[in-house]
Amino acid sequence: MPDLRSVAEHRARILEAIEPLTDFPQPLMEALGLAAAEDVVAAVDLPSFDNSGMDGYAVRAEDVATATDESPVHLPVVGEIGAGQGGLMALAPGTAAKIMTGAPVPAGADSVVPYEWTDRGVAQVRIGRAPSPGQHVRLAGQDVSVGDVLVSHGTVLGPRHIGLLAAAGRATVRSRPRPRVVVISTGSELRDPGSQLGRDSIYDGNSFLLAAAARRAGAITYRVGIVPDEPRAFLDALHDQLVRADVVVTSGGVSQGDYDVVKEALSPLGTVWFGPVAMQPGKPQGFGHIGEDRTPIFTLPGNPVSSYVSFEQFVLPALRKLMGLTPYVRPTVAARLTHAISSPDGREQLVRAEYGVGAGGAYATPVGGHGSHLIGDLASSNALVVVPADVTAVAAGEQVQVLRLDEEF
Image 1 (cartoon, rainbow, N blue to C red):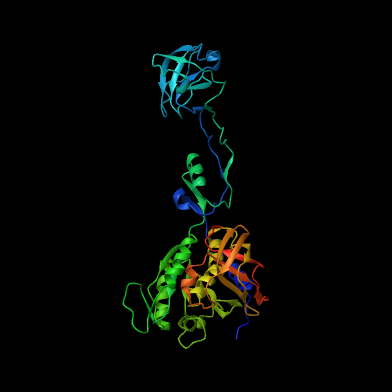
Image 2: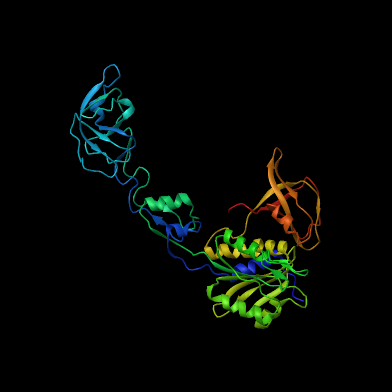
């Protein structure tokens, strides 16, 4: 019987065996949600030229310094400048030019009078209010200057970063690709949703659960059809999928039963560890490498709650390391437990819970029973309460550490 590993030890061994994927320049939209693998430095100023912040008239401030509604200043309008139209390059003293928001301010002008302060004249404009020098002019480099770091190495690229990089003229950014995750469910009793069930069959929820979890983590997922409890059929399906896999995740077939096909098929290879981890749910685990490219494989238990909790604890950190995302492990937050719970001695328990924030602060309410088959309770949860292996009971009102399952990190 293999030694009982702690959750932290098993996760540490997995992360030690995982190498980040090689980074390369990716189109901006493909990099959304990934981590930048470079410091991106601005090659242009933003704005790249002085431009108008308002629709109005470009002027010299000193020419209209005395303008009031009672004593307006009248200036001849010598041209019109629209965004993307830089025809009027210079403005003579004592004149004005109609200008649109974003259009280049001509040399000689230092301010913009908004339409609202004028009579919107065409040949001549009446100005009833004086702008201060530089008012309503967006200066070149005011936002970003050449040489500024736009995005630092390791920054997770969100919509605002993508917009900034595009505005600065970058079409690509170096980042690690999304890992390709192949998900395989084993079990002769499984049927695809939408098909007819027999008296001894069940629908395959696990492959959808795990594929969805991997996709939400940022991976590209491939859900493989159901594989029966036959070692040869499992190995054939597995080797067919390795060509498109950076990671393989299986569910089922890793316990001590007579039909635990994953364990039976992979144990002879000698490259996959199978054994117990001191956790509930999810005690039977497996991890190793397969194929010529030593593709990482996670063999998770078949009960849906065990499978999902195992994904959270072991697969998710590995996927984040492959993508260069940190931290690898979902952080915990403190919350007040609303109902007492018990826990087995020597096993870290992860209790499904509803996390919320009320008048008394953050709280966690346990959801459902201990059964690892209770996927309805899992779907009703948004958190896991972490009960350490050396704790056998937690009273209502005590502070606990909670994993918030729906939070980005």
